[in-house]
Image (cartoon, rainbow, N blue to C red; front, side):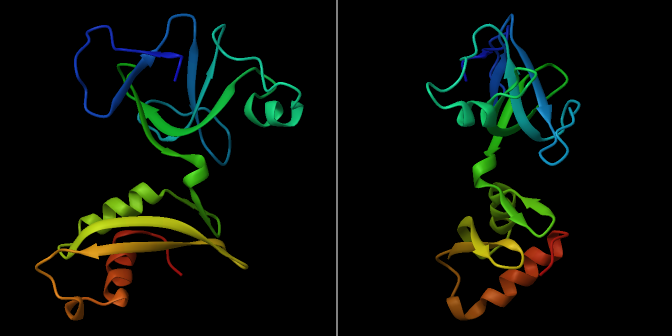
Length: 168
């Protein structure tokens, strides 16, 4: 992101992509309400300032979908900043799963799955659903020492349901 620079201390901070560049503004907004969020709250990353592009050539609709009436560029990135102004990007809005009235981030569901003792790898995607918008679908690889007969898809569903507030 062109509006981000290394932290002044140049200290490595795991997951940090930098801090806002001088002359640029950054805010995190709630994805549903579009209201600004404080530090350590996850939402869409928005920037504005003199280094921002003006819009898409001959495509006012795409420009209006990216830059709002207050000149904030909606990056489509999901993340947060901390008390020191360090920015962390955690996901992409296009990768979000909209299940009923909930917004699910695949990376969070994947992290939950990876906590399971039998799961080595996990990928979560959204699958279109007529009534609910999308349903999350997980693809998992079991650890080598686990036999497939020892864990069923239903076991995995129950495990995730026990750790989240989202239910079918």
